[in-house]
Length: 500
Image (cartoon, rainbow, N blue to C red; front, side, top):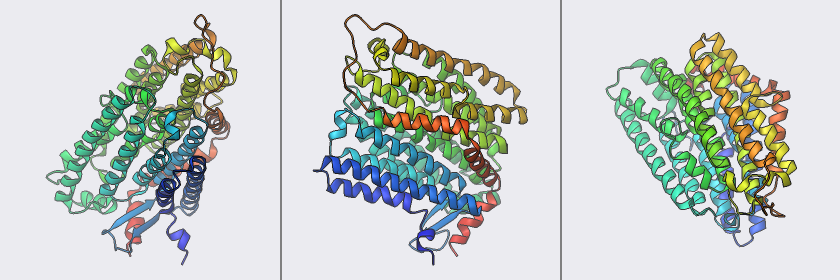
């Protein structure tokens, strides 16, 4: 028996969970705690990469029935192409977040609970992707919310507590919706295992509570991804959260909703998928426009990037809405690339704020500060190119694939709208770059001699350029994800087989 191989899907979840417990034990040794947490996350990332490599090489999912329970009972963990790729995406950015934290001047970094909570954030996020059960997705999402709320409430920013309350209560609303959806589905079909549920819904698509369950799940994942019109909590939250935290929440945590939409439309509710996709397509187009216009008019770099996330998620929803194999592959590539870009850009905003005369990302504070920070300016410029979809960056790859898939799907009207709205990205990126790096600083203002480290955003921007130049591995993985998702029988066979 291949013990490691059989349990490979468990390692990316178990390692940060156990690591968080150990980090709490060594809380009186702050540097040891920090490096331990980074080492744990890097090892967890390595296990996720191994899981993805195995899945892509074999063309089969790695499924585990925890505790040896037979399918569909007990807890199922499933590493299929989608969940494995999203786990790699999440833990790659989380590793960069820990590297940023190691070089951050935020007071929260010195608090003993910071690193344990950060690892629990990673546990919740990875578990939400790798679970094969809707109720356990709820449990992992709650772990994600609790750790994210605590990390935000302890922010140096005086609005951190207010932002944490907003995040918590919006997440509480999403949790309520999800529990109601779970209850409705269980009453109708007697199961919460996603593979078993998919089979039962396909056999009996007229369940009494199926329609409200779908609506509730849609609302849940819209809140999780801050999809218009459930976006209003996000700008305040990301402007006040510590940089190492906001960079995670605005890049990979919002992908929980994207993941949920993909599972809904390709596995759980295949017969109802056309209606769901139509809703996502409409909201995606609106989100691209609204997010872009809001980002143009905002007064804070972090708020600008938060509204930018609303627009970028809109592009992803458009791809899911088209629903073809190329469009789904484009949405997956867009999700992965956006995570790298947005994390890097928020870290750069945090770096500039840490060097400003008063620690703030408001434009009236950071205007002209970039003149003293040329290296950060180069990284921000490259990140702005990626966010705008200009070569040779991964953002160009994302938009090229999405626009090609739109032409193939004959979605000309939404394609025209989002194509024109893409110009807004270039507008707010250029505006921010000009204010920070071209304008003269206020009289007497100059950058502080020290601040946060540039290592983490530099590594992410390096990946942004690497994928922009050599996109074949990611595009190939996304294509495999798309082919797998459009044949739900593969998922059902993999998970059902794990139960014997």
